[in-house]
Length: 128
Length: 89
Image (cartoon, rainbow over the protein chains, first blue to last red):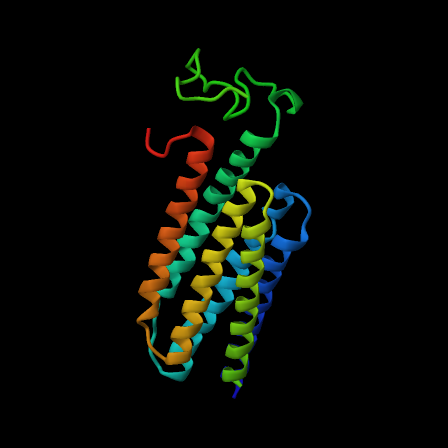
């Protein structure tokens, strides 16, 4: 009975956070703000569902299964990379280089200025 | 009780899938659409795991792992295409 309550609580928490993540994607005003919402679904939502899956296999069927952790690990590793790429794609299309603050280092913003050690941007690079 | 919680989680992620679909259809910028596609992949992974729990099998974990990998690669490829005009330079 206690394990049922535990598994059900994990499922409900995961479901609520997944819904909050997708609702924030619709609700928030700006693309940069919208980057914030789905991180809840990625971490707590999927994490809760996977913990419930591990708990069901262990407490209800007596099987210790750990391959759910692979999905959690993969999502946790790839989520920051994805968010960085999406933010850079948005900046590339919508934000002028002149409106950005100074980096106060020898090289400029990534994606706008050439990387350190290179004097010219690569030939395929669009300048904006 | 677990069955009711499973149905609740199914409903949550199903509604979330519809909300991301709305954002893909109306998103003003390609970055919004990429983000919505990424969230859609997350929702589908959750639905697959929930369905595996509903059926009581472990077959769907491989499918959800594949979805996670393909979703990551497709998101990065789409962003690369917008940033550089090419995927593999």
